Length: 378
Image 1 (cartoon, one colour):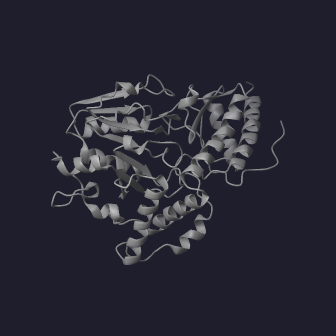
Image 2 (spheres, helix red, strand yellow):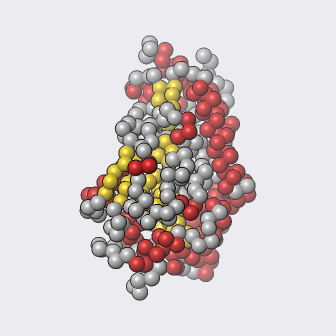
Image 3 (tube, helix red, strand yellow):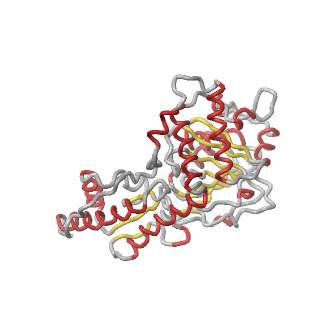
């Protein structure tokens, strides 16, 4: 097989940080660098981020959006430290990051009544009907490292007594979620579907979650960067008007604001979802036509259309050589599977990736497979 003559315009297929949106570099010229985030202009930019997030996602009017430190990890930990302990907790996971939330609940928070609901092997979704609507429930909508997503929220009871806490970091803006009324807390990182910079996260709270925050007597010390309640025991409303607990990077703020404006100009949430699905279709067509490559997730309805995880019939060392070959050719960067997952590929298909780049990447993937296979005499 001859080497392809063209290369992707953008070879960045990492699942986080993800490919940037078009025009991001020029947008940074407007960043409020060298100025305080507490200035009139700084507060205005942060508030615009909150307002545009709310608008593009189509959140209910009584849901609030806050910018928080430490990416999605910080957002999830903030919520766990602030809300958990009043009720038993069901933690559903099917890859590494969801498992971290379970370990933190048991080993760090020392919660006594925690049920783990997990898969038998990578590429599967556990039985979510096992969750108890009287318990708090933590789950990851899309398993970034496993390529397995929740197909819908039908399993969440409308009559639940507990809170649903959804880690949505590689799903939100990239796949159909909701209805939002099913989710009491939603967290995500800027670095995923919108291709923002790392280090900042978002927390979205429903009225039910706010009521818990205000009424729950937290039985533990809360670090300053986790505090969503003020000294009077009320919601720290400033956080949800665009003010922040600690100093943000105004370069990252400008980049996120630019990504939101790009998304709105593209056509909003529906356009983002459609673009990701078109990208995913490129991968699906490629895999369906070849016997040597497979989805890690066997059930089509559970396959992620953002972090697409694949396995091959190549030995592990040959898979790594294939990745190195395409890296050296400057065709595709950072598309190896997550370190805890079965060895293979993880290709980002969010809306900041162009369909034509994926199509070109697939040509090179065919070529690299044959090169590696022949050299290894497989």
